Amino acid sequence: MSHDQTFDILLVEDDPGDAGLTRAALAQARILCKLHHVTDGVEALAFLRKQGGYGAVPTPHLVLLDLNMPRMGGRDVLAAMRADENLHKIPVVVLTTSDIEADIETSYELGANSFITKPVDIDQFIDSIKALGDYWFSIVRLPQ
Image (cartoon, rainbow, N blue to C red; front, side, top):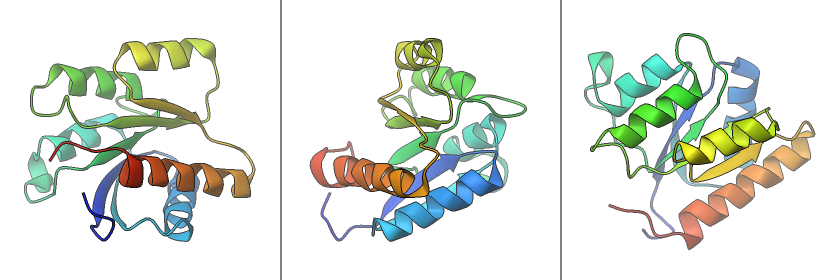
């Protein structure tokens, strides 16, 4: 992927404040991306499987996944993605307020590519998103 390509990121986040903060951090970090946002795991899987109103959406290059959401949480989304032949290669970064060791352990066991605890400080959060963007879209080679 070239540096001038726009990346599609699916943000799975039920908190509107955290979603807005992530959007702002991506913009401030100057990551060329189109951010798609859904608010729970049921919508995330519909988006990823192009079901319902999501028939024309792109397959994301990266999923930013919150763990604790209504209807279907991030752990179940991750397990479903890794069990689905069409979705199992999409990189997933767990982006959550949790720093509980069991959540970290479970996320990796379910196939997360990274686990980031959201910093409370806005500047630290922006720095984390910038580092995430630099890593996933400048350094790592993603499958086409």
